[in-house]
Structure formats: C-alpha cells, structure tokens
Length: 215
Image (cartoon, rainbow, N blue to C red):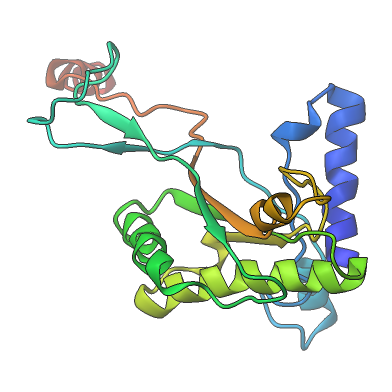
C-alpha cells in the first residue's frame, strides 16, 4: 500500500503541475518485492525506497514483407498494432481458462524477441463481494496471467506491470449477469519504451573528415 501511494503521489504532481491527463498515467506498487540493492544496510534501504517509471508507446509488431498488409508511409515494412487481450474469469475464480493459455504464452514470445517491450496486466472483478476481497482477487488474477508467461520464458520481472483494480472501472453494468461476466476479466497490452533520442549513423567520409581535422 505504501509503495502504491508513493507512485500515486508522483502521478498527482504530473496531473496538477503539468496538466497531464489521468488516463495517460498508470501507477503500480510492488512493496519490497523488487529491490535494486541489498536491504542489509541503511544505504541500501534508502536506495530501495523509490519510485521509477517509463514513458511508453503502443507496440507495433513487424510482419513479413510478403504480407498483404498495407504499408505505412513512414515505415520500410508493414506492421500491425497488437491489440489488447481480454481474458474472462469465472465468478470468484482466478484460474486461467485453458483455451486462453496459447494467446498468453505468445505474449512471452513477443517479450523475448523484443527486449524494449513491457506488458501491462490489469485485473478486474464484478461487485459481488467486499471491496477488499475484490481487490485481492483482481490482483491474483493478474498475477496468474504473469505466471503463465514467466513459466515459459525467462523475462525480467521489471518488464511486467501488474495491478488489480478490484470492482473499479467496470466495462458493463453489474446489475445484470451479462454485465458481471464482462467485468470479471484481465486486460493485457504490450507497449515499448519510448526513445527520447534517435541514433544517427554518419557517413564514412564525415568521420574521416573529422579525423583529418583533429590531426
């Protein structure tokens, strides 16, 4: 709870001081689970009390150039946006249904093949239960999806952004059975880190000219 509140405090400053829209910010709290150094010393504990973050953009997966997909004007090869995967769950359950496992495992393959990617995994419930129970259940659902990926591929934990929202943010009415079924879900999306600078390759003659000037 403390780590999540720390992240929320940073997000609040981005909203109030820089007018960043709230739907552009996602906050996660991992508590003591992801230390960057040993907690055996005071100096180490000070380094571990932190908030870190990434600026990300939607991941675009390149396709075979022989594909019939339309080419983007600024791309040398065609691409397709990777859409969010929605995984439904039975009432009060966090077990992932078997027919969704191949799709979840394919996320691990994309993460393995693209080191600059992250996966956001968000769990939700309906409102049939206490708020605390629903929050815990939604986190458990999200973690189960992450576990499936990590069981097949060795992916660093810091590339998983896992959170549970409980009964908050329903996509349908909880007053109907159909609506409650839609709200019991995990959403996943793959994003890639935004590069603030771009590598520039200089022609050989430019490098040679610089060398001549230095001499």
